[in-house]
Amino acid sequence: MLQARMVNPREILIEQVEKPLTSPGHVLLKIGEIGVCGSDIHVYHGKHPYTSYPVIQGHEFSAEVAELGEGVTGLTRGQTVTVEPSVTCGNCYSCRHGRYNICSHLKVMGFQTDGAAREYFLVPAANVVPLPPGFPRKFGALIEPLAVAVHAVQRLGCAEGKRILVLGAGPIGNLVAQAAQALGALAVAVTDRNPFRLEVANRCGLENAINIEDGQRHLEEFLGEDGPDGIVECVGAQSTIEQAVASARKGSRIVVVGVYGEKPRIDMGLVQDRELELAGTLMYRREDYLEAINLAQKGLIQLEPLITHTFALADYQQAYRLIDEQPNSVMKVLIEVGG
Image 1 (tube, rainbow, N blue to C red):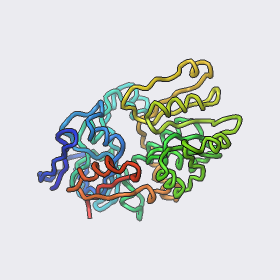
Image 2: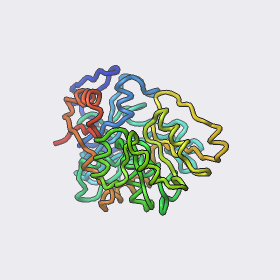
Image 3: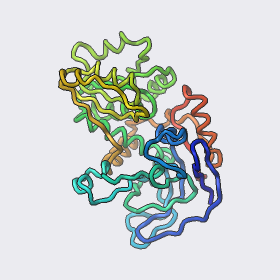
Image 4: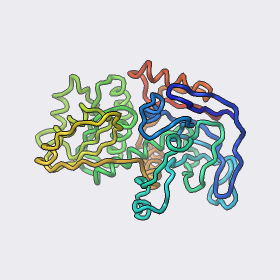
């Protein structure tokens, strides 16, 4: 089978390897589509702090069940699925208390352990998440980032009836804003400097997509005197965390989704004086996956406008080059593995 292995930053080797053998408690998957996300780009650039080389990437993906290992129930051959890429210990405090997404020994497929950038991938059956009949297979590759968004909105507390500000209209920011809207927020605004991303946000039904460069008045009108009930930072940049703290209403919560390549400086005086809550969010749990699938199946989340480019597995490195060379015209890039 064909496999893409990143042997060094900016160096991906396409190679022929043996197809995995099925083992007890595991499922052999025929990979369909793989999504490329911002964390993958960090790995490609050699800037991910928790990934070493070589590594097989691919943590957001769709697949079909090819073979079932001994003892596996609840799945059938040919079934369309996605996968929770978390590899957890099951024994630490967080795991014992149902918060395995922050497992003390957490590994993630495609980062600390190999992922799905291959034609066939053997995974534990417990990580497999079935998709509904008729659910478009390529959308299965977007359930992982949508689950990230659902979990982030849940970290705000109940979204229903709230005014929520989302900083960053990239794929995750877009999905956070859509998820907040779908989960009952009174109003949602999403900001960015990139006109293309804001146009995609509009196509996804996000009416308050504001260019932070020239839309300050629009943003102030949206926030009103009371300001937002919650802010979600989805960029991972000094400027946006500063904006989040400065824009937050006293006593409100900021959820940090963005991944920071460099340590940011935060005005802790404002955090203290305004009794702000800074909350991190990491990945998701099974319930977030199920809610993500539910929202997408009901048509409450628009996924098609996010997909801007598709590449074959053999052209994996070209996908990264495109993202590097045309960052202002790219949203979600898919690697199509299965026909």
